[in-house]
Length: 183
Ligand SMILES: N[C@@H](CCC(=O)N[C@@H](CS)C(=O)NCC(=O)O)C(=O)O
Image 1 (tube, rainbow, N blue to C red):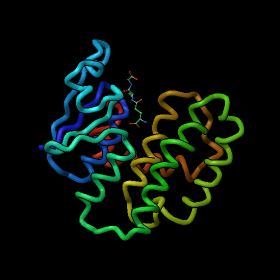
Image 2: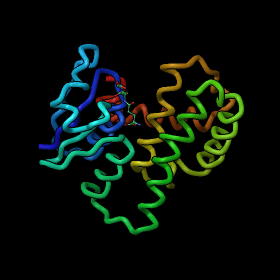
Image 3: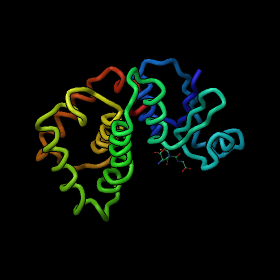
Image 4: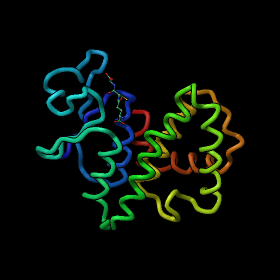
């Protein structure tokens, strides 16, 4: 069975959310990060960087949440992705983990970047419920999880971004989100 390694309230929740959406069996291996279990040789053999999340799918090990999301989408989604579709998924996942994350959570960038990025998301979500259109996808897991951390970690007023806040609400109502996020 696929194993997901994570800590309490870590970025492993992003992968957990997607595994719950895919409804595939998995085992969650909770590392005690206070006790530095993620730096022990057993885990460093899985992720030499000593960070979570990481997965073990049989004897295949993978780390970096974005790479894991793409791997799971390709292996476990019912559709086969074209090169262009896969590139688009990668685009949104990279956007979430680099551009959006830095623009929101790195204070030195926030004032300049966040309004620009949230305004662009606002425009997209004004005409469609999800990032790729009518259907929920792994792109929503990647971007939605970064957005979901905003109210948890920062006291920011998002009331100017109605479409984005409605989108966050829509995502947070998903049973898979509720089983996984912030756990
Ligand atoms: N870009 C990585 C970030 C991984 C990361 O920094 N994880 C944190 C937990 S949320 C971690 O393992 N920190 C432990 C440490 O740095 O010692 C990803 O998205 O997987």
